[in-house]
Length: 192
Image (cartoon, rainbow, N blue to C red):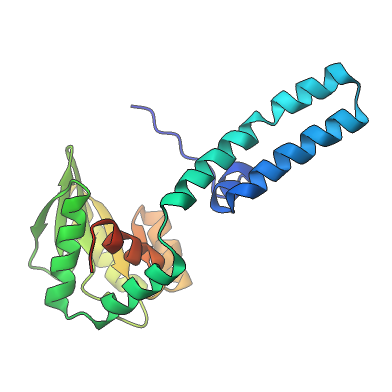
């Protein structure tokens, strides 16, 4: 199966993260400008060339329509920060099961859960979800455990990791979920 990964800094990737109406506005302005400045046969071609912006606007609108409000995200983060490890672990287990993963709790320092879906295995480390700072060492341990088990790594925390840790995670292929990402994981499963 072919997977397409868009560069984070490409125009369309930026527009997908922006409000939907910006892409639509670009399309309209390009079309109006083309009809005002170009001969009609060229203006039609330019107008047809704006179709990708309309598609991006539709995708962005769909994503934004289904996204939780900032108030719900903040509320979910507050609740997550107030949870004990036992409650948070249970919420994480339910959240990942809701996404179709089989979840196994692990007893170890590097990872807390083994997630499996359609033959893909991931190790989730989230025990330090409340920590104020997250350095590279915990990510190194997670990466070593992932290499040992042939799994992908996910590190989940409320506070952002350090810049060095973020660069290490990116270079190592570890997925970082922090801040609003944690709230989205919890809200998708109806927790907390």
